[in-house]
Length: 365
Image (cartoon, rainbow, N blue to C red; front, side, top):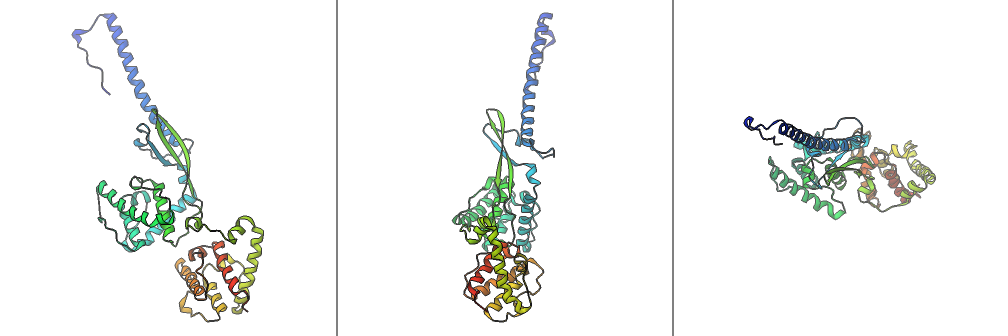
């Protein structure tokens, strides 16, 4: 802000002029203070818009978040949403998954926004998942170079996802701008497309604060951003079957189906002095599924083909996957469920698998 010009002592007017000049100065000073206060109020309004009606917990607010150009807008996650347990779980599951995929690259991701924005980790992740090499520079420090790498990586991602109906909710600027919502949308899509052996929390939503500048004033709005729905819908399996109907509209009949399936599996497992009482838990490690297939097809399954006492998640997934192969060898179609869903105690997936066995082998003694 420019200061008032200095006045020469030799040109000082008489008292009346001095009073008038003083009032003029006072008016100018008040005008400058008023303008400074307007700027301060505008910044404070932006901060209040971001924080209210949020909890008093502090949030890091950068000056650019409140000093907006006309018609410009900024978005940020409501601090309360960041503390939501399902939101935290989603971030943790995705970080653990990335680190598992890239363990041989000796890459360790700790914070999604800071570690993925420049395209380096995303490049390595996509190359590993898709088993292909991208034609990009390995290391880029400049912003232009980083955005060029991101452009190449995201174009490859889009080529994979678009044919399967995925809605693209991210772009180069949002990823490079460290927008967590965009990064999460991208990672969820990749995890689902490549059938990652993880269980994403379902129905995760966050409140997003949108700050816009209209006619010199900051306007705010709260919108709900859906990050995950159900595993089935995200996998693109929209066709509904009898179990969807049972779960949604006839829970009383569901118990009858469960009892029928328990009776069916015990009819065969009892031959090995085994008994099932809980479908969702006792088939989760895959052991009973493998043994059941041997009984139904009347053959002995060599013990070296599966883990009789699995301890890790991967060993359980191996067992269930092996059981699925035995089912296909027996003439059944590939199960609709994922092995990871069965291991993660997804009852609907387990029931689908067992019901397919029931329809084919219900008359086997």
